[in-house]
Amino acid sequence: MFKLKTVIGASLLAAAATTAFAYSTNPDVQKRQETMGMISSGLKKLMPMVQGKADFDAATAQAAFAQIAEYAGNIPTAFEANTTDAESKASPAIWENWDDFTTKASALEEGAKAGMGVDSLEAMQAAFGPVGGACKACHTTYKK
Image 1 (tube, rainbow, N blue to C red):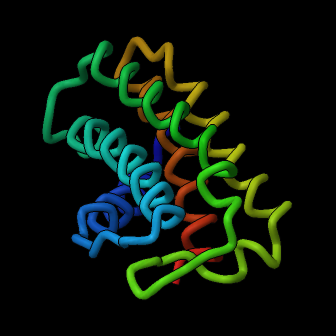
Image 2: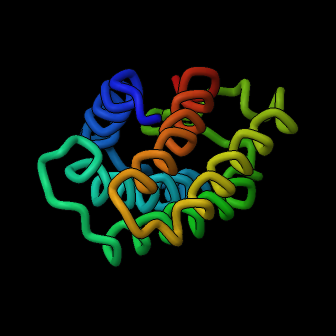
């Protein structure tokens, strides 16, 4: 069952995802920002449907989950260089707890893959819960 708590959490994630941030001149940080930006873009396509502000569209939801899964799969590569700068929101804890970080990235990828075949609002909402939870778990621990 889809819970109000998931919608509220998803709304908070969407608000955080829409916050403008400065782009780095560091190529390693740029790669991370691009990866996370594409995940955010996928979430933004789902949010209006999750929040009931737009009608469910299976093709849009499936494509958004596919986009999130693709870029979530790139997270370990995007973060393998242990570099930060003033524009980076990556906590040094990422590289101190690499196995946990990559496990959280895998949870996001797997959650998004589970949503790639949604064919109803209820299925999309059920699939969105683990995706939103994976985002929150990682950002709570690894985003400064």
